[in-house]
Length: 316
Image (spheres, helix red, strand yellow):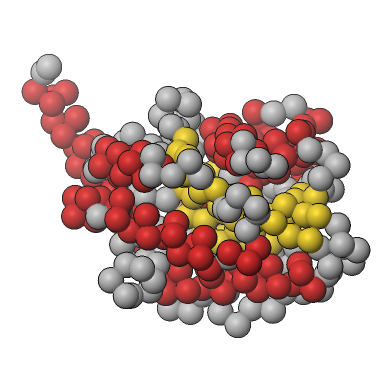
């Protein structure tokens, strides 16, 4: 390698590392979450005792929605995009995507992410659920914040007796959503929680090494918090690896190993190997790829895979 090339590589690496350090601050978490004191608009018809399946979605930016709709439009057929744009008649979502909220259950569709014109795994989840169960009613309850971490903000009650502010808001929002659906006479069963998080914890070796402990506690607390709505077999926990990007997520391998270890603790846990799945963060925008967030088709595939894994726990 020539001296000039070495200098170029060093500059690129330094810029990438700096980006990794400051990246979480592009998703600054508020002192007061939009879930605090939330009131859900009454827009759903009476369920009349209909059975409905609930999927909870949580995490940070690859869950809250930072993949861009403009590239999704270019990568799918006009017919398919039209389906996404109209939303799915049997899959509704109440979402908190960072500072953006739906404030009601709406048809799951495009642009329900944290970034302007962004979407998260919910779109792929809804598409797959609609494809496989067109006559079944689903509700997705999504609470995700870009840049959020498990070691403090998502920390659940079992961890050191301290509860993170975001976990509290998440629990409050999900409970409010469930109570609303119950008031509309739906017979609810939570089948799964899907979790796309860990990038922020991968920035520090200490936090990465603590990830398994905190994740195990989170899963136990989620199951205890929503036990009254759990399916007969309990709530499945569907996790996913973070991207294998050592420039941004320095200790990604430790976090992913923690996820694998925790997934093996229970047959109600599972984890998606997003690396083996071939998900990419390197193509969009073409002129300056956002290396921290999944490209549009990869985000869609992540959601579809979440649904496929969750479905394995249906009607067991």
